[in-house]
Image 1 (cartoon, rainbow, N blue to C red):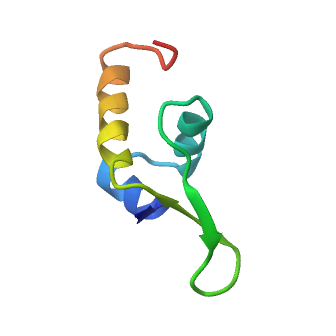
Image 2: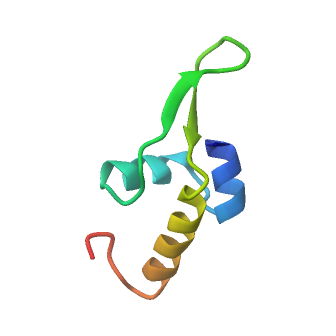
Length: 69
């Protein structure tokens, strides 16, 4: 499982809100939400395969595909 920051680093995506939009659109599976290790706030944990899926989405968008396609 990867944190949002780890997914962003591995994919080059700049904002966590992008991941939120993509899972709300059904393009990637939703994260597991858990309490932060510090005990303050929440942390999203993404499955490892989300990185591959995000990279594919980025490639398709660069080619001109819309998220609906």
